[in-house]
Image 1 (tube, rainbow, N blue to C red):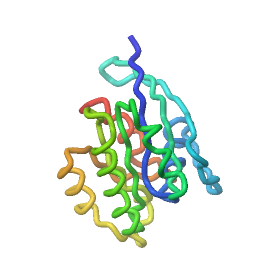
Image 2: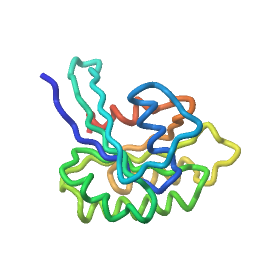
Image 3: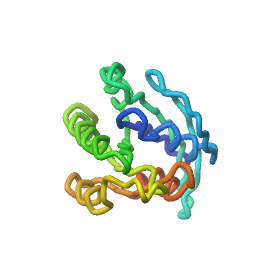
Length: 165
């Protein structure tokens, strides 16, 4: 039996949400990714090692401020949220915390939250330490991983980990 899971990606513009979805769904990376307008939709089916099959309906929301009011339309009814920050931007980490507060306040009561620190391949430009991201995720009972859409490091893990919570 296949379980359908609605997953929404949240985070400010430029953190790599669309790149993460593209890497997870198509195992591709595009250097010149256009900004998402409103939201985009992709889906992917996969089977876990225990034989469970899932179909993800992935809503990738726009991070620009002018589209922020649309976000509740996409996370309403979601089973899981992947909230993304760019670990080379401390500002995006603070923005992530505002996204999580909004999700906790207005989102579905049992939504599973995962925090992804994207761009872990850019170690020399890091502004947010691993411990900071991990401690924050633990404080809100969320899963956490540092990921790279470019190299695919931990991308499948952070998407599929939503099913183990």
